[in-house]
Length: 78
Image (cartoon, rainbow, N blue to C red; front, side, top):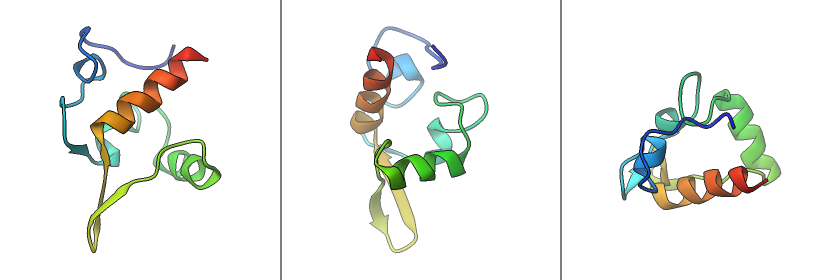
């Protein structure tokens, strides 16, 4: 699989914090957990293949860690 793992804990397995929110650049991009470009990720989100961000403010969006881990787990099942 193309996903980068570190330990056996659910969120730590993917080098993410255990709870909270992460920005797109924290898990998408070259050398990251999901090695696709941001534009590919946005296209996937628009098509319904990827999770959509949560708005935290007028100019800030982030993704719940739990949703990111669930997305990655569903990707690994295929």
